Image (tube, rainbow, N blue to C red; front, side, top):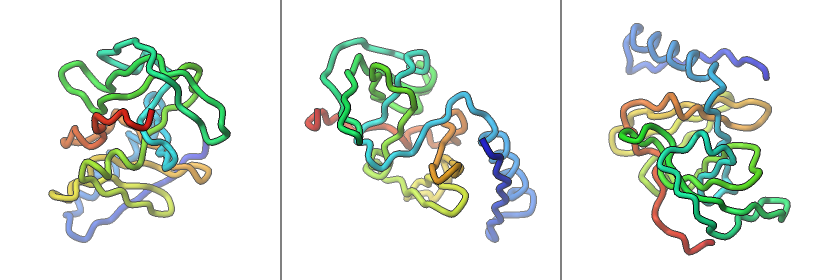
Amino acid sequence: MPKAHLTLLDPSLTAYQNLKFNLYLQVCLASNNLLWYLDSGCSKHMTGDASQLTNLKLRPAGYVTYGDNNRGRILGVGNIGEIDKVIIKDVLLVERLKHNLLSISQPCDKGYKITFEPNLCLITDSKSTETVLVGKRVNNVYMLNVSCITSSMNCLLTRNDESWL
């Protein structure tokens, strides 16, 4: 996987704040343990890795259909993060899913703005304009490390709407 060198300069920040933010980017984007693909075709957050989920409730809940029309069986639902500090709620556990997928629509429905730039994407709180998550672009795919979310911890929570299943 190619390493991207990212330098963001925000004229509204001091030199120290810009340096601190860029160090944060380098550390977060170098870590591969919790990388998720930002997916515009995904209506819910989902993973095939049960070890990433807390508060996992195993219950068959139908199927998801992939872009190639294959289906994956939903085995349960859980959260990403610690039991007392949830980062993402209602993440589907899907049988044999090989990648972690984050829905683009879910954060947008919660009032967050997603900005795509040539080498990165930013998820910001629309009200406070605080950047809560930074992703990198690798081979034309935007990837996020959910372990590097800043102080707004609700940015990727889903709505409780199962009507699409």
